[in-house]
Amino acid sequence: MTTRSPFLVSPAYDWAFFLLPPLYALVLGILIAGTPVTDGELVVAGQDTTVAALVLGSLVHAHLVAVVFRSHVNPRIFGRYRLRFVVVPLVLWAAITASTWVAITASVVATFWDVWHSGAQTFGFARIYERNAGNAGDAGRRLDYWLNQLLYAGPILAGATLVDHVDAFDGYRDVGATFFTRIPAEVTGHQRYLTWAVLIGGTVFVVAYVLAHLRLHRRGHRVAPLKVFLLATTGLCSIYTWGFNSWGEAFFIMNLFHAVQYLALVWAMEKPTLVARLGGGAAAARIAALVFFGSVAIYGVGAELLDAGVTSLWALTVVVSLMHFWWDGFIWSVRRQQV
Picture 1 (tube, rainbow, N blue to C red):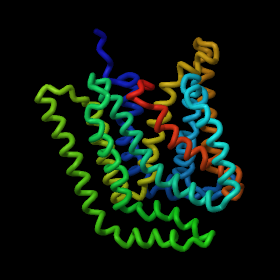
Picture 2 (cartoon, helix red, strand yellow):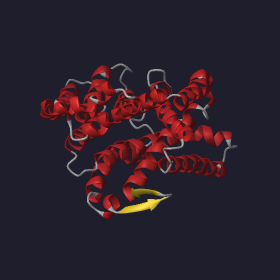
Picture 3 (cartoon, rainbow, N blue to C red):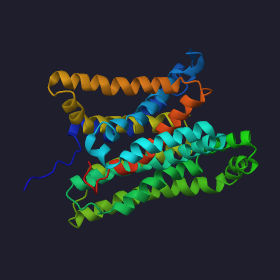
Picture 4 (cartoon, helix red, strand yellow):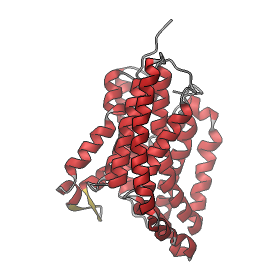
């Protein structure tokens, strides 16, 4: 019987791009806080920005569009969901460009769907490591799922960055929907009752989660140590980054490691397909790398520097975001053995 490797790709690749990025991002965010990288203003393509904002924004947009290499370039995946991959984004783009209501609602949905999606991505990695440890696909699944959502969404809903998230509702002011514009004030008015409960409760949950797996290990259960490490470090990073934002770089830290993990995952999984479609061989591998990283980088920078006043192009970036969140929910299924 062949023993499955505990790693998704390889020890070096997994540690560099999947397991340690939350810690890398945290350290980097602390180091650049209050430096010219985050505070020094520069003008690029007529827009005021900073080095950190430009790099992060471009990286975030790049990872969002990278899903296309899984959804449309992989013929096995594309063949299963043609309608979802072709018709739905076209209809959504048309609706956003035609209706201000739809455009504002799509923007709000994207803001909060991103929160859920980010926790779901870490959950996906956790399930892969659980499977690779030799356990059944449903072993501990529900606990892992809610742990990720609690430790990602909880600190946002109770922490220092809550205002930045609920500000998305301000767009409804343009269409006279005063009910929705009251949401930020109502939410922040009750924030103090949530903050310490979520932050303290989340920390206790992480510690209890680790201790529970230690007890399971002593009883002979095949614990996935890589999963436990990933969830514990990501959870603590989320709690203290989103919750306190002590260095003012919460968005930089959390979005940086999320984007790096995703780009590394797509490249590792789709490189063989892309190389094969380019004819195979070392030359095809180099071209594949250029096509993948070059195309997502061009889109990322372009989307970050986009003039939001160009409705059709802005709508495209919203569609890319929403489709990324939706498609990821069914094209990386561990239970369906798609990874």
